[in-house]
Amino acid sequence: MRHAVSFLSLSVVLLGAGLWVVGTGVAQDGTGARPDATCDVPLTYRIGEVDPRFGLSTEALRKVTREAVALWEAGAADRLFAYAPDGELTIDLTYDERQGTWEAQQRAEVALERARARHAERVEAHDARRHRLTTAQAVYEQEAASLARRLARHNRAVRAWNRGEVEHTDERAQALQEEREALAQLRRRVDAQAESVEALRQRFNRHVEAVNQATAALNRQVRRFNRQYARGGGYNKGVYTYTRDGRTVERAITVFQFRDRDDLRQVLAHELGHALGISHVTSAAALMHHQVTDRNEGLARLTAADRRALRQACGG
Image (cartoon, rainbow, N blue to C red):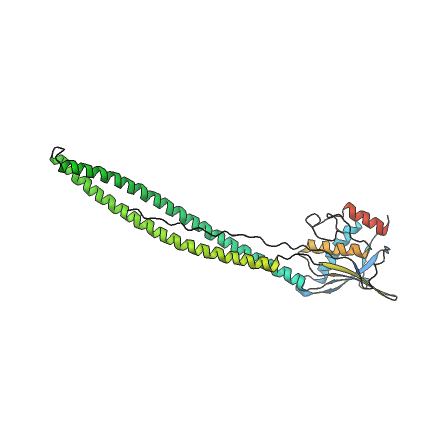
C-alpha cells in the first residue's frame, strides 16, 4: 500500500522598507532677506537648548560642534568660529516628530529584523522536516517495491507448486513456507514504515500551515512598516536662521534630527556653512549639497566644491 504525501506550497515573503530622503535645509533669514554674505570671522557660537530626549549632553554637543568646526577650519587660512558662553550664534537641539518618527522607525526595523530571523528559523526547521519526510518516503517506497517483487516471485512459485509444474519435495515445501513467513515479516515492516511516513506527512502538513500563517503575519508586518515609513519627499534635519530687527541680529542653528554622532556632525557642519554665508552647491558629493546622499553621507573632510564655496564667501 502506498501512502500519498501532500506538499503544500509556502507563501512568498516580499520585504522592502521604504527609503527616507532627507535634506539639510536651506539657510533662512527671519526677515525674508538673504543672510549677510560677508564672512565676519571668527563667528562666536554658544550651545543653547538641548532637548534631553536626544540623550546627548550639552558638553557632548559642544564637542561634536568643535568637530564640525574643524571640518571648515581645515580648509581655511583663518579661524572661522570660536566658542563663547554668550556667542552670537546659538546652537539648539529641538526634538519634534522628525526625530521621534526616525526613532520609531529604528525600533520597527529591529522588530522586523527579529521577526525575519524567527521566520527564517521556522523555514529552516520546515525544510529539515521536509528532508526527513522525503527520506522516509524514499525508504518506504524502496521497501514496498522490494516486497512487491518478492511477493510476485513467491506467488509464481506457489502457482507452479499448485499446478504440479515442479516436483513436490520437502525441501521445496520448506522453502515456500520460509519465504511466506519472511514476506509476512517484511509486510509488517513496510506497513509500519507506511504508518510512520503518514504520521510524518500529517505533521509536515500541519507545520506547512503554521509556516504559511507565520509568513502571512510577517508579510502583514512588512506592509505595515512600508505604509508607515516608506514616505516620499524629505525633511529638514537642521536649519540655520538669521533674523535682523533693526540693530538686533539673531543667528541660530536648530538641529531636528540625526542618526548618530557622525550624522549630527555633518548636519552641524552644513548649517555652520550657511552661517558663514555659503549657499548650497550643486555637487551631490559636497557637504553643502542640499540633501544627504550616498555620495556625501559621513563626510570627514570638505570637497573641492565646499572649499571653492568657502573661498567665495570668505576669500583666501
